[in-house]
Image (cartoon, rainbow, N blue to C red):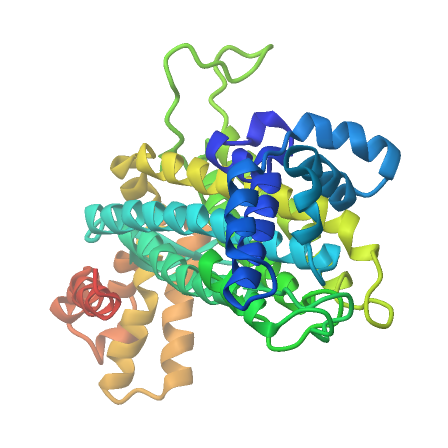
Length: 430
């Protein structure tokens, strides 16, 4: 991912320095484990840990010749520990280091993403309560439907964010597994106790079974989860882009002092954050497809997944970290215009209460289809003439045989909505 979208903390996780430091720790822990079970003397393991040093630039130089990153790493390590290198990497294959290290990096990245989600959840909860009782128009198919409250939009997103927190926790638990079991996963040249020790020290679980690599369904599930989280952010961004349209303008991105919207039109205030979030969410779905393609490898392993993962895991975690933070900032400072919300609510001259009138008629004994047609007749008149819906109802003699003026008036309020909003919020625990 380009630096423009890389936040420093997440970027460091995928740096060569961090990766090689984890590789080194895996090798040192394996030495410690082998000393515990008597494969190598304990003082040798201690000396290796004291002397071991690695240098990312030197590893890159060596790799120019070896064309193999782990061998380049081990060669550089040997330069600091000398003949003691005979006690390093015993019975291990490159994937023991690579896959176990990869799990550590994913765990580090996942913790940042969980923290991001928690921050977003907090903002959503606050704004849901802020607008809990602000009546707004609900839209289906992009058309005015019935009243909601503006807070319900945020409450809906809060609930999805809560689900995504649980999804990410589950996906992290699924992918945070290591392997130290040799070339094809048989433990032929090392003890399972080495794997148990290394994984425990790194906060991982040992994979129950592998071939040369940990199976990539774990990794696909993790990336798929990130893509699902991205769809939530795109959902939020898309709604905010609609709400910022000039013809709607119920909400608007905060425009910082000195910010410019267009090089040609000085008046422009564009939803650039929401559009950026929408665009980057598309990347995550593309990464999900690539991750699923990685699960089918030849026999006990081929290398076709490796180059893909070197791109999609840093990019996917960096991308999601960026747009999670951008969404949180966008929602935190989102400008809401209650006067425009109210204006749009009554744009259709009261038609939004049509179902309440329909149900009032059926409660009085009128057959549903007859009641529907009767209410629709007055509604269509309002559409065509842009006239007040309630006035049209009061002019309908057939309708007045069932409902009094007072009973009709009673349908044009938000009391029931507010009551049910309390129920929904209580169910969400906010």
